[in-house]
Length: 209
Image (cartoon, rainbow, N blue to C red; front, side, top):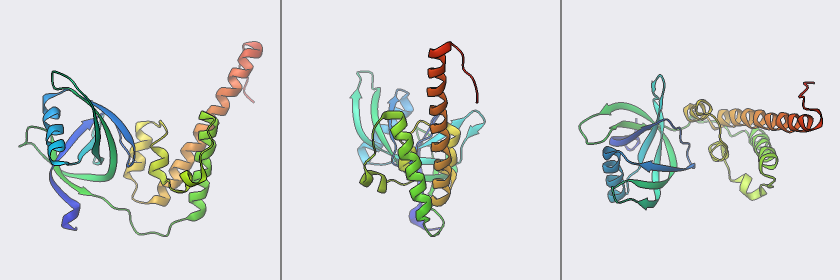
């Protein structure tokens, strides 16, 4: 394990939230220990890690975040932040000697593989179709070309389990396959809602088939 992939006393923020690399996430910080943690991160330009605190416990894989902007500082010390996910990590050990949660973490990397260009194109087309259906916006070709699976998924409100599944995968091809399925499923749900609304307006009933 390369030493530069390890970080000791890495600030951890357990939340009912999953963050993906490149995702912009607003955070409201109000507990004293997390106000201290954010102060340290701002003073030393450090990242911190968001880890999903699920009903069955803390997940092993989280996402490091950097503070993009302090949106608001309130008189009692509470802060509203805009943060951005940067890179996935694995929690190796929890540490309790600091005034805020921390741990020994390892930044994780994808396994070597050949990029699947056809898979990438199919995933981006599925994403573009979802964007068109949901927003009436046509994604620009150069915008799509520069987006990986994380970047596409970061703009769609999937459930926490799906987002954690993406974060756990150590293969971009595998992530592309997963997001393609998620995008297509979301588009089908939009189709169903449109048909249901149209039929409900016509006769008050929704018929299947």
